Image (cartoon, rainbow, N blue to C red; front, side, top):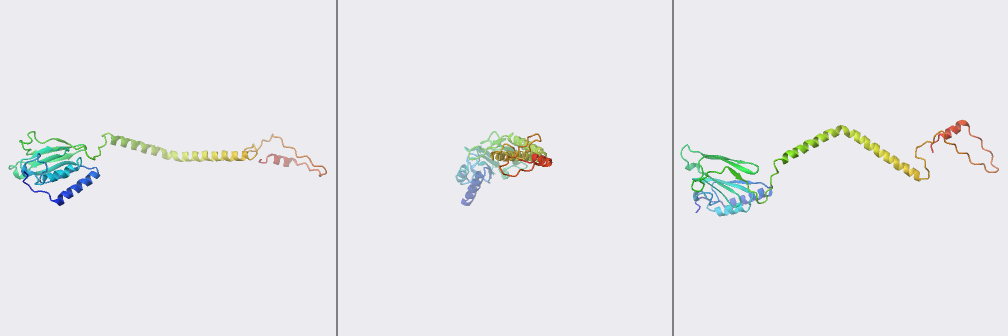
Length: 244
């Protein structure tokens, strides 16, 4: 069985808390620990003695944990559990031969990880094909799928086009405001003219009769009233141009 140390209750509680926060934020997590938690992923010397509890904590957040990386296995090992979590047990540097390397780089991409190892490989007994090159990220749980590769380009193109339209509209804005104001004033005049027409006349507001229009005759004098003086020519012309 497992022969290494273990995680305390405080450490397990901290691990669950961090994984919960990561799940709420839609993030993926890489767990680094001196010892592993998957029995099929490394030798007994490289396992936590309470590996089952640690594994249960990881399983509670399926899709959030991408990999568990440890370094206490004398020979090194690799396995992937049922939730898609990669368990990397790097070969212990203390067990390497002189001038024999045991290190590497784990590159995290949008939908996968790339492993580049140098020196000691995994145990031939458990992993004869060597280290994996590409590690797919888990897709289960509450993870939010990454946008398609062309989505960012389309968004950038649309944003650029909107900025161009905005720049073109700046010099035209005063003209549009002027046209809008004139249109609004014209509508107000029409409404006011309609209101004046409803008052009992057919002549539009502000319209002056032409000079050729006949001047209406004065009303007939009542019997016994003194005769009215005829209007002077100038007064008649002035009356003819009066606004009605």
